[in-house]
Amino acid sequence: MVRRTPWLLSASVANLCFLYAPILVLILFSFNASRLSAAWQGFTLEWYRLLAEDEALRLSVWNSLLVALVSTLVATGLGVCAAIGLERHPFRGQKVVESAMLLPLVIPEIMMGVSLMLFFLLVKLPLSLITVTIGHAAFNLPIVLVIVRARLRKLDPSLEEAARDLGATPWQAFSRVTLPLLVPAMWGSVLLAFTISLDDFIVTFFTAGPGSTTLPLYVYSMVKSGVTPVINALSAILVVVSMTLIGASLALQRR
Amino acid sequence: MAEPSVELREVSKRHGDTLAVDRLSLTIRRGEFFSILGPSGSGKTTTLRMLAGFESPDAGDILIDGRSVRGVPPNRRPVNLVFQTYALFPHLTVAGNIAFGLEMRRVPRADIAARVQEALDMVRLQGKQDRLPAQLSGGEQQRVALARALVNRPAVLLLDEPLGALDQQLRADMQVELKTIQERVGLTFICVTHHQEEALTMSDRVAVMQQGRLLQVGSPRDIYEAPQSAFVAGFIGISNSLAGRIETVNGARCTVRAADLPSGFSVVARCPVGAGVGAQATVVLRPERIHLSADVQLNGYDNVLPARVSKAIYNGSETQYVLALSDRLSWQVRVPNIGNGQQRFQPGTPVFLRWHADEAVVLSE
Image (spheres, rainbow over the protein chains, first blue to last red):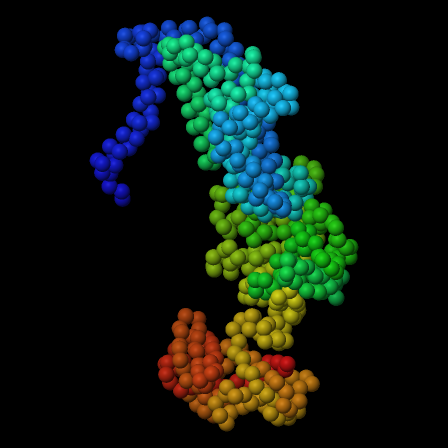
């Protein structure tokens, strides 16, 4: 039996405060009636109402959702294929390919953003929602790959052989046995990729063109003209949505 | 002889630098319970995987029901495999697992339900059809794996170490049950195992393999009582062996003298065919064929050797003695527990081993 020491308890509380106090303050002040957000002057939903009326904001939210959805679907499709290829069909030079595919996880995002922008300029693809989506798919691909592959590695390879033995073609064995068993991991990676895409600023900043403002870019432009409680309200919503998605992702990966 | 169900003709398979299966030829009869027995690395699992179609032979041919299966993928072979790990589909129920093969072969839906029920009855899992594999015990999972394969009515059922994951008691029960099911369905069963007792209990015939080569094929009785090599003798149960030279030949009998025996003693045994005086010979003797006595007299036996008890292990149904015949030679003897009045020998006491000449097998190299 583990004895709970007061020391351990206070360390945990301090840790949680360090992580979540700023976020709690932010959410709290999104309901603050004061325009200067320094002191509490009573409860209001005014900032949320202003948010709802902001036409440009609504467009940026729509852009963000569209980019997140499409880039997640692309990254999931490619990532699942890559995971199966790497895990089940070993080939020469596999290690090199593997490291190359995981590189976006470790290189600084700003480098990725700049290089993507230069690449798009080089191939003369005008910066737009399309380039943003491609950029997001690029950094989401290794995330899907890592999660799906971990699940695949835990599956007994004889399951697919059993299906083949029972009369399934290779495709039936995959679609009837392997794929259903990968679904929880796929949902986990979809939610994680979707959240990261939704929150991304740096890559988006370099790959977005006129008319392709996403939510984080819009928030940034709002902040440049001074921090208003509207930003608190918007951030509060983003925090809650992101945490919900990440929580769901973790729950699905654990299955 | 019944017509062959499976024929392997000079089948070879290489894995990297090692020859996993070396020119293996076997004929397995229809409706036979056939076991391939061998230690790990003997090529038995590779042989099974070639029958199932997961690996293809480098040379030679495999015929199932008289037709070559060269190039035929696993899903189009008339065989089904019970995997060592069972490989049950974790996302499907028991009924879903059993129905899988029928669905793949497009059996009408109404027939599927009836056949799944029939398979469940056969393995005594009625009422468990809606469980998931994770909710079953090891023995129940084993039965599902068996039902999932049998429901397809394959020409040949392949079993890969079928009882390996079960505990001792369950293993003994399942040995009998597997044999009963096989007799009832009348299918050809080919079972791969490293467990000699399992192979002897269930099989009509046993093939012993070592390092990719077939050493001996025969009934369990042949394999146990007339091993043709020292490896088979040693692998099938415990055996005592004595390496020496044939000293005299007298009709069907010969005497073998060995350096490991106490001086002045030799062993009388059946003379191996074609062996003459001076030939190398190994005498192999099962531990339960030796009679222990405190008495040096032959009393109708052909052989008597002195020894000293070094260990006596009582395990209920029998007592296992480890006996030192000389500094270099140690034998095991098993004495069944026949109740009160039986003479017991304590470690350190001298004892005499007696046996009939025909109880020993003599292998001549």
